[in-house]
Length: 217
Ligand SMILES: C[S@@+](CC[C@H](N)C(=O)[O-])C[C@H]1O[C@@H](n2cnc3c(N)ncnc32)[C@H](O)[C@@H]1O
Image 1 (cartoon, protein in one colour):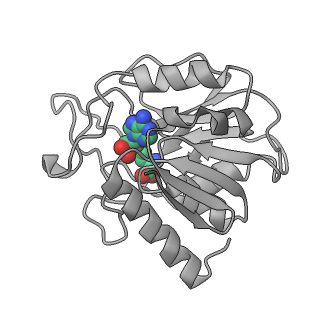
Image 2: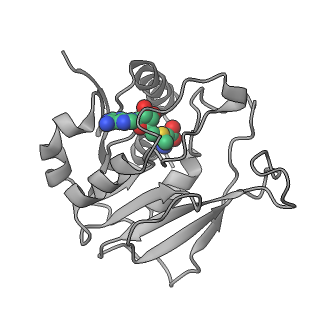
């Protein structure tokens, strides 16, 4: 049986999104942070690996199913070839240090990429440069959800604010639920899928806490 949680206009489903492709076809914008294809392990390898993170297959399969012309914002890394896109936003994590990685180099990585596909985005004031500086969760911080790659809810809100208010959002790789939490805070309609039961419960708990606190932006 598929477990489904609902918080205001936001639904979280514990399943492989590929069992629910009709939701992909009904959604207006794809906002997601897929397995990057870098076999990432969080915090000193204490966390379990992300399902499907050995290659970019899941990312590329999703983009093929979604199509190049529908609006999409998809996280990625410079470490693997990027998909064809119309722009790439740099999320610059100004609050964190160089971290680990290739220690023989003088630079560590402190930014991620967000690929923009499709048309019709909302332009609130005037055109902006394609970067944003929003704090990441520092490793080991109390606020950091217990997931290897949690995105800040504030960053997801910033992305969603560039979508048309009436658009239905879909996140097929929900993880700790940052996209869904941001959507709920902003009063948007969204659906997300997470294959891992523990991460689904984590996201559901965070969404429940937000709802109880009356979090809105
Ligand atoms: C990079 S993480 C997303 C992190 C998320 N943005 C957050 O803020 O926590 C990718 C997630 O996709 C999930 N996943 C992998 N394959 C999936 C699939 N076929 N369907 C649904 N979820 C999947 C993984 O379990 C993982 O939690």
